[in-house]
Length: 70
Image (cartoon, rainbow, N blue to C red; front, side, top):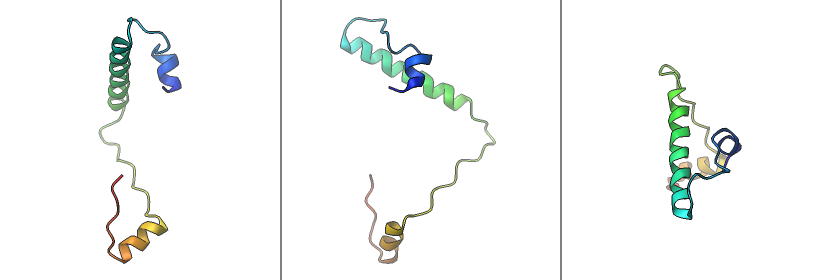
């Protein structure tokens, strides 16, 4: 749980009794936070540039060894 969720969205207190209902509340709150974040992005904003490959990734690429997907 992030500080934003705990303080800004009241996730320290649960409206419902029972672990299942509390879990559903937390999931719905997280979805709401994600929608708020996405709506704050401007449509013309360019996506961040990908990070350059590490030395190990360059080593794998030079030897045509496939990288593992994590």
